[in-house]
Length: 433
Image (tube, rainbow, N blue to C red; front, side, top):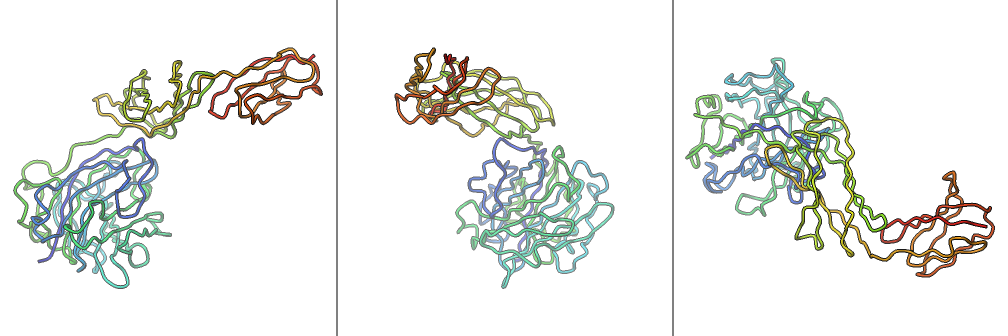
């Protein structure tokens, strides 16, 4: 039996608090992906035996769209296709209008002339293949009444998670990978087809919203499986049939997920000890529907206590700097994280940062001296600045009690800054006479 998966979703994607996914055909460790839809009707009930599509995930940063389809297809040139609607584009194939045949007679887009219930601007396909490549990838452009189907990666990609990158042409910078797990019953749970597409190559930007529809078809693209995401109730085990006869506008309800938003692109988050306080700083590149940040602290990285909240900017496409001072940190290791909260209550956690407060203040004496001063409890680096702020001397402090030679300094007042090895900074004034 020929195979064919199907999937449809609507999503407004914005960069999350984590780093972007690694293109390797697996979502293991890629916590930034948004799961849009999941198949629940059984691995053996896709209509194509132990082959099918199980999850659709997506993510976008300021530069690229990332798509992950978890599942496995049979190695007989069957294909996964993902159709894309970009909010900025108005001249794609209209909803409830049959898709045109693609320009490449060897691509499944040539036969995928189904009718979708959303506007369609682009399509991405992966064909299972054979020697010397595991599979083949192309992108079709439906905008402006077009049907140009562009093969990528000079022929094909491997099936072991090795990524391939398109080096030239309209889709330069596109990267893809696939892991062949034999069938759905043999996979570990993380494998599938993964692709990164530059936003500019599909007429999108960091503020774009998207709709998706994905399917697995036979190699000719003219037959579609039962396996749809979001699921059509009771569809498991019964294929949809010839693609030219399938009209998703005739299926009751919207065959796509509701909009989902991860509202903040977090560039950095850091913690630095200063005296017996901790300075927390973070920077966002953009924000959507961002109500506030909740600062949380933990002594073990497991149980968390809310310290305070800092209001977000709501909606912004500008770089914004935030800061908060923990005036009473623990006299030990302090773990910190941000809980970013939307106006609708949805939330996302940042990565965890830590800093150690030893509770021991440095001692400097005498502060009025002619030849030397003694510093205790300050292993690290000591720096002297004159009254104009100019650096005049720097010392490496390796001992708990250390003598600093200042006899050749010009008489006057100096600021001594102690950058301790635990990350804390202490300052005091001394006078050279």
